[in-house]
Amino acid sequence: MRIAFFLVLFLCSEAGFSQDSNNPILTFEAFISRVKEHHPLAKQAKLKLQEGDAKILESKGGFDPNFNSQLAQKYFEDKSYYSTNATTLRIPTWFAAQFEAGYELNNGLFLNPENEVPNDGILYAGISLPLGKGLLIDKRRAAYKKAKIFQQSTEAEQQLMLNELVYEAGKVYWQWFEAYNVKQVFIEAVVLAKARFEAVKQQAILGDKPFIDTVEARIQYQNRKLSLQQAELEYLNNIQLLSIFLWEDGLLPLELELGTQPEGLIGIDSFVDLDYSLGLDFDSLIANHPTLQLGQFKIDQLEIDKRWKREQLKPKVDLKYNALSSANQEELTNNFSSNNYAWGFKVGIPLYLRKERGALKLNELKIQDAKLELNQKQRGLNYKVRSSINEWKTTADQLALFQKTVKDYQALLNGERELFYNGESSLFLVNSREWGFINARIKLIELLVKNRKARLSSFYSLGVN
Image (cartoon, rainbow, N blue to C red; front, top):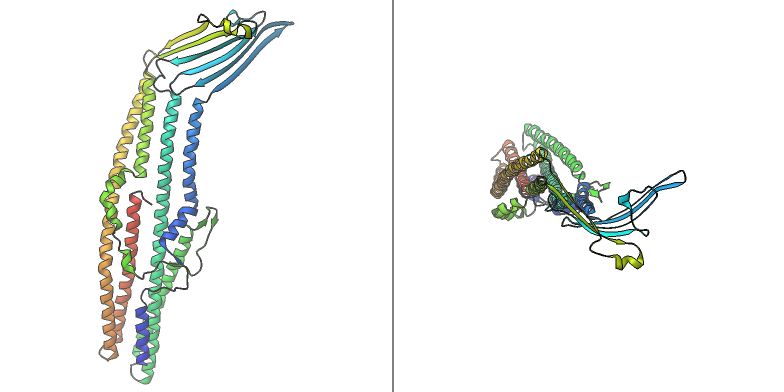
């Protein structure tokens, strides 16, 4: 009986952190890869880029050629007072100038003299150019430049959304990992307690042990069953939480396959990685953080607004010139002359410019505010990166150290069992050593999860997913 009893204890303790090879295993990398590919938020993040492209297309509309045709006629008491027909094509350019070409055909008894044209109509082609306000930058060019910045900002927003998604999903994965492995520890603990209870009961019947030892063994067995039930509850709840991140093409929610296990604790040394060396160059990584990029993009857009608002302080000086020619095909070539033209010159400026100066001042204040906000965010990111990398390093060291502690606890337990086998120890001490070993294994799992979350937090704070 004693030989069978200690054989059960040995096999259970040596099982350690093993997994059932028959069940499917979901690794962290596979889980995150699926989340990034199929989660609705990942799909939304991809839409951000399309939003940026649409904004560029919209801003380019300001440079589209514009075709207009206008007809106005008046008839009264069988008289044609006037008939005016004007067709115009305007072509804006990036350099403020606008080309214009058109055709006019006007007639009637009471036509305004300035609208009189040859019988076949008149053709014109020319250019209009702002020499003051709008020469260096105008509303169309400002809109296009801001749209280009917006397009870049959508890439940063996409990165932020993915970072947030990976961070939240990663934390849930490691919580599930912890719940699963804690449950496994208590499953083994219940097996041990049950085996001991049955063995002690048989020994008491044979007279080798007092019956009071069976009471203590049964209490330990019941307590561990309670702990197992709580661990199972935590595990089931974490399965449901993990399933929130499982989708198919962002439309169909999925459930975790029954019996699926997280990546194993076998080879736990591999978790103590050294890739936190990336923190040595975290200054450049922080500089390219999506959050800071968005802050800088906001400033860049405000700077464009500033240029446009400063342009409003200039006087409005518009020059327009059109060459004219008769529309008659025979006279078209002969009729062309540098003496046939229409031109105009327009100047205007508000006397006090209070509206323009006020708008410019408000814009400058917004730029100062945005720069202060960006500096604050950068300082906050520096702290988050340093603290998360420090925790990553420290928990890695703690994990390596505590692995030895767990082995020491197991050595104490094995020694106490040997003493108990030789009648030199008590059931109370064996139970005490077992609880110490169980708690040490659970703490090791907690340290491992803490290290994984710290690694996740480090990448998240650096804007890397």
